Amino acid sequence: MKANDEQILRGLATVSFYANDLKAAKKWYSELLGIGPYFERPDSDHPVYIEFRIGDYQHELGIIDAKYTPKNAVAAGPAGEIAYWHVNNLAATFERLLAMGAKEYEPIMNRGADFITASVIDPFGNILGIMNNPHYVEVLSSDSGKN
Image (tube, rainbow, N blue to C red; front, side):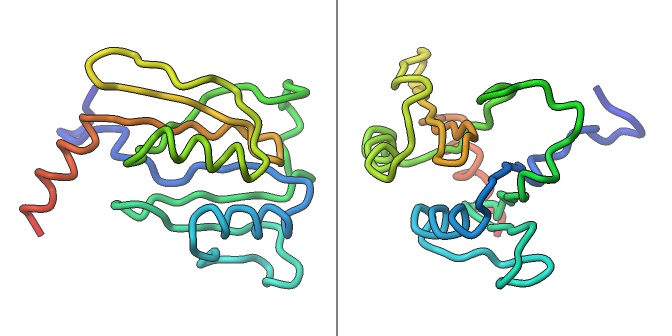
């Protein structure tokens, strides 16, 4: 659907997770991603929100102190949508996540046409999806010629 000749949903801006222990989440995700957060509020000693910029398009992964979970949240455990992040080596990434303490949520599944997915529950109760996505690779390849 378009409004004013522009697509309404333009791209993934920020995926937000919640954690009861934001300092532990910062450490865990910094180790997983190989970088620290670029943004922390109010500061790095007392964070209530941290944000990482990751991937080819610098998408944002924000982690919020769980005390700010919306009051209307109904799930007592992992639930809701799953954002899948493209990875180059799905099996190796899945094994690394499990070795770091994540729990399997959905095993590696071939969805057909080379789309392969898996998901885990991070140590803070969030669902983290990973995927081999040929469409992502195709778009990335076509974008690289424009730069």
